[in-house]
Length: 143
Image (cartoon, rainbow, N blue to C red; front, top):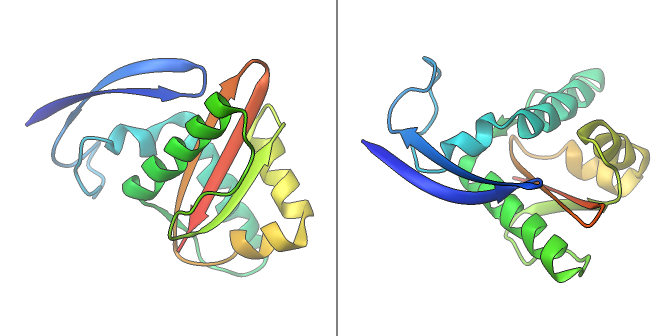
């Protein structure tokens, strides 16, 4: 089955079609937003988080499509509203406004003891980001 979705990610508005089933032979849970967990910036966020977790002896996170979608929606809302605040999502959450790259966002979270402890929690994560008017908003959610 093929479905299409229009979504804003970063600075681009994307129309994406996804095929329900295995993606590149990987055991993803099929759904209309699976493309989000394959976006290069989202994958980089996961990789950088997992590098930090490995450095301190903790197992890797797994991306969760629904959690990525929730994080992306919150990043979109912050960017469009100009309001920088935590959401009421049912996850542990880290947010950041400012860094222009995934590397910068993760480095900032690592430098903050409170954010770092959240990065090291859970086994599933979702990430989102949005750039508007030269400002970038980053969101990570964990369970």
